[in-house]
Each structure stands twice: as C-alpha cells, then as structure tokens.
Length: 250
Image (cartoon, rainbow, N blue to C red; front, side, top):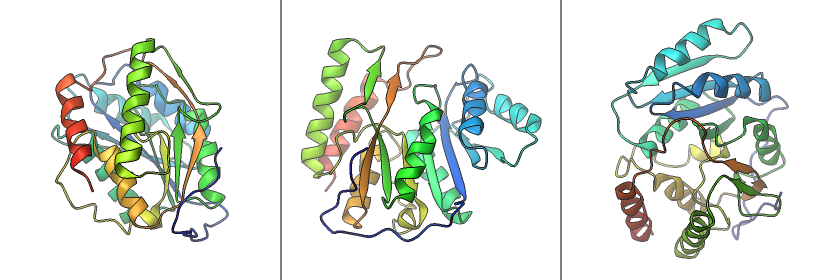
C-alpha cells in the first residue's frame, strides 16, 4: 500500500471504531455474476450494506439481486435500485448519493462482473481508516496485477492511465479502475447533482474533483481478473467518448 499523498496535506476526519459501510455495485446484464458477487461481498464485509444500481437489465439482474437479498438473514441490508440505462458514471453517482443521504461513514465501489475480488475490500477499508480519504484499488503499484488481458490491452491501459494522470495531475497510478473506498464526509463536499456526464469518464472525474477538494489518496494493490461470464459494457464508442471527456476536464 502506498502512503497517503496530497500536496494540500489534508487530514481526514476521524472515523468510528465500527464505521457504517455501504458497498455500491453498478450492473447491466450481470445476472450470471451478481449472486456470487454478493455472496463474496457479504463474506468479506459482514456488517456492510450493499446497494446495487441496475440500468434496467433485460436479463433479470435485478430479480437475482432481490432473490438473494430475501435469503440473507444477517445484519447486511441488500437493496436494488433499478433505473433507465444512463451509464456507469450516473450509476456510481446514484450509489454515492445513497451513501451520503444514508449517513454512512465509508463508501466502497466495485465492478459487477467479478473482475474485482471482494476479498480485497477489507484492505481498502483499512487504508481509509488509517487516514486516507480515498483508497484506490490499483493494478499499477507494486503487488498489483492484471490476469487475462493480452499484452496489447495491458499496454494500452498503462498508456491511458499515464496520460490521464499527467493531464489531471492526479497522485495515483491507476485512475481508470473503479475499485475504491471513499470517506463519505469527503464525497459530501462534492456536487454530485451535476449530471453533465454519465459515462466511464466519471471514474476519473471524481478523483479530479476530490483532489481539488484536498483529499488524501492512497493506492492498495489488487489483482484485476478479466471476466469469465458475460460481455464487457465498454464499447469502442464509449471508450473514445470517455477519453475525449477526460481531456476536457480541468
């Protein structure tokens, strides 16, 4: 894990010994993955609540979430918010807003396709408890890894992250991954009502906004594993649109 880094030397507010945690999962056509994912999340963070924001999946993702939620008898609350398909950025913003309005202390976000290992969640939480405002699950720090990608895709991802980091002056090596833990009090300082962008670029944009707000960052090494079931939702058109949006951010 890298040390918290921020030129503003911001100090995160103290957290309770047992913080209230909300885990956000954004889905579209993940019926084949979501039950296993929820099982792993509740095993990793038994006291956390989970919000699944589903973009009106036609494959029954929301029904699978509700079925699993009805079978849970522990302290975890699992709820599903279904909305018209509006993109990843808007879905993450909706989950963040739930965390703020629900008076949670920490908000964690991970992909809905099992590419992120929920077993890494406690390490991200611990990093924020140690003083960071944002703990980024990073593929590009010592100990981080990508499994299942061809060399060309790994190279392209590294280049995109390097350009993004320099363009937005972010103190992180992995700005395009969504596996993160945020201090909710810091998220509450942002204007999340701004719907100017609903797509993938929000992943970078929220880091930029937090950086400008004086947030402390740290990176926690993770292993990203290419999905086994289902198809990626990042189209070539959306990738180009996201890249163009990043260059417009300032």
